[in-house]
Image 1: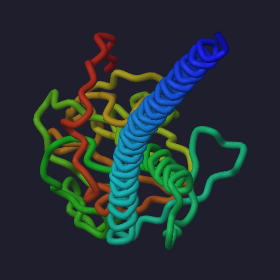
Image 2: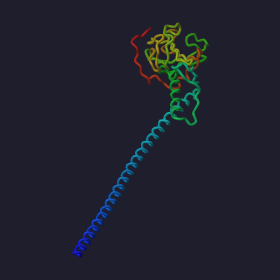
Image 3: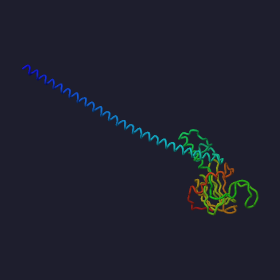
Image 4: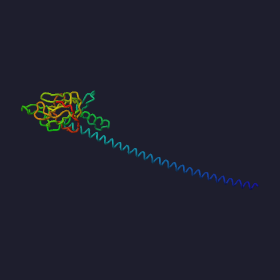
Amino acid sequence: MASELQAELSRKEEAAAFYQRQIARLEQSRQMQIASLKKDYEYKLNNQKVHYDLENTNLQLENVKLMNSAISDLNARSELIESVMNNIGIEIIKSTPETSQNSGGPFIPLEEPHYDELINKVDTYLRTIEFMPLGKPVDGTITSKYGNRIDPINNQPGFHVGVDIRGRHGTKIRATAAGVVLKAFKNGGYGNYVEIDHGNGYRTVYGHMQSYVVKKGESVKRGQIIGLVGSSGRSFGPHLHYEIRLHRNPVNPTKFMQVADISHSLPTEVSSDVQN
C-alpha cells in the first residue's frame, strides 16, 4: 500500500514538473512574441518619423526656395529702380512723415537685406515712384526741346520751359503720375491747359490741348487720360506742350520721359464729359 502511494506521488510530481516546463516554454514564447511585436512597432514608428522628418525637410526646403526667389525678385526690382534713377540723375525727395500719399528719401542700398527690410525698401521705392512724373504723356516725337530755342511763331530767341511733342488731333494724353488736378481751364497762350500736383514738390503742365476731360480738384492716376492733343492757344500745328516743375521751377522733362513710355501701359477710358 505504501509503495503504491509512493508511486502515485512520483507520477504527480513528474506531471507537475512537466506542466511547469510547459508553462515556462509558453512564457518564453510569449516574451519572444512581445519583443518581436515591440521591435516591429518601433520599426514602424521610426519609419513614420523618418517619413515625417523627410516631408518636413522637403517643406522647409521648398519654403527656403520660395523665400530665396522672393528675395531675388525684390532685390532685382530694387536694383533696377536704383539703377534707372541714378543713371538719369533723378533724386527722390524725402517727404514729411505726416504725408501718407507720398514718401521718399535717398536710395540707400542694404548690404545684407532681411526679407522684411527689403519689402519695406521696395515698397518705399514703388510708392515714391508712383507720384513721380515718369514716362511720356503722349506717344510722339519731340519737336521742340527744353531750353534755349528760336520761337517757332515769332522767330525770336527765347527759353522753352518744357518740351513739345508732336501728335495727331484727338490723340489721348495721359497723366505721367498720380496726383490732384490743380487747374483745368483755357489759359491764354497755353490754350486748353491742365496742371497736376503730384506731391513732393512735383507738378506737371499740359498745354495746347484740343480738350481736357478732368476738372480742378480731381484725383488722377498714372496713365489716366486727361485730355486730347490739339492746337489751342499760341500754337503752330497739333502737339502737346509738356512741363515738369519742381518746387514751382521748371526742370528738363526729357530725363523723366526716358524712364518709361506709359502711353499704352495703363489703359483708361476717356470720359464723355469733354470740355473745350
